[in-house]
Length: 183
Image (tube, rainbow, N blue to C red; front, side):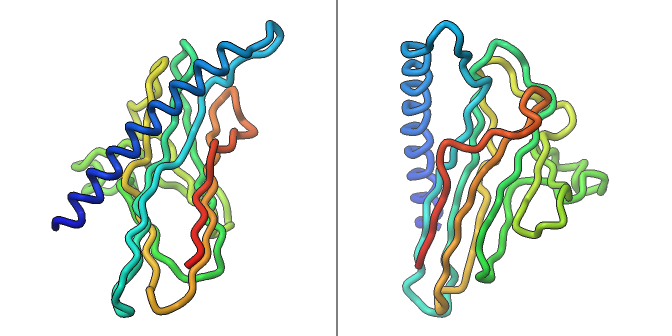
């Protein structure tokens, strides 16, 4: 349990560091904006931590978050994200989201994100903000604590890219960073 609490503490520190980076980035955009340019309505980015197993029978673990910061004075009502996990290696993906929002158990435990199928591509994992959730002006929302696990005794390579879709950004905006793993 100590490792999990240390991992959560470290992830919290990384989130704070990233929040400072986002604020500096927003200030930079405002300072260097030309009159005919507009700030992006939001930005998105990943934070993550990896627990590499030392025993070949254990699993490796990526513990991550995908964060969206609203930089505008408008509320974003319809927010969708796609996490594209590019790998040919076997892995398990899980997190704090509803897979079936109509199920009785899902209604008893409300989640911010609902997973849905939008593509036949099994590399794409689509989510939408749950009913009653939206992104208020200058606020942020996160798909927190998603996990990717893979076996330790085989090589693993993976790239994760995030995309955010809204009514005003129907073509999607790519995240500021990606997660790249090669073990």
